[in-house]
Amino acid sequence: MIWKYFYEAVKNASYTVDFSHAVLIHGGGWKKMLSQSVTAAAYKQELTRIFGITRIHNYYGMAEQTGCIYMECEYGHLHASIFSDILIRDPLDFSLCPVGKEGIVQVLTPLATAYVGHSILTEDLGVLLGTDDCPCGRKGNYFHIHGRIPQAELRGCSDVPH
Image (cartoon, rainbow, N blue to C red; front, side, top):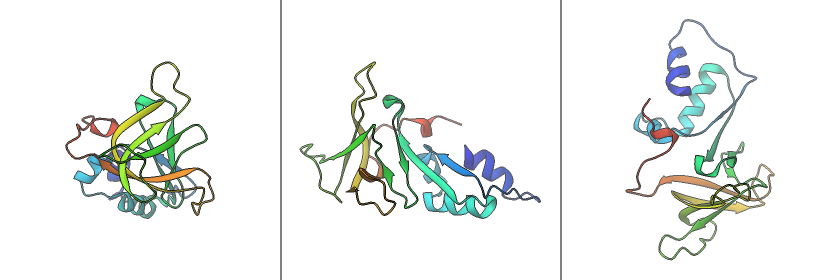
């Protein structure tokens, strides 16, 4: 939505908009963006160029685990909060993957108490980058999402027709 209705509307305008003091937090829509050949890096670069926004942070989360999001730090890593955790599972036997090995993302939180949403094995592939040693200084697990498991049904905020 930011790209389509904000960036696209202003990029060729005769005026400029200065949002250099803004912080942009966004999530979802990457599957649609990839079909337009817009990578996360290009997204940030263009929003910085057009609007002066330098603090742009993505997040990972899902409606099925309400209240739990995984914020991106200034180094581009997604972080589990003190109210969540993330595990990366081997797709062959569901054992835990070591740091650096791609697998199926499992998200955990004690916040989901109204239904069985405290542990969800997603249809996303990701990799655990480390624990307690991100250059940003935040503690806990940090990771990267590579995308959906091949042939997984496309669902989520980014898949709603706009």
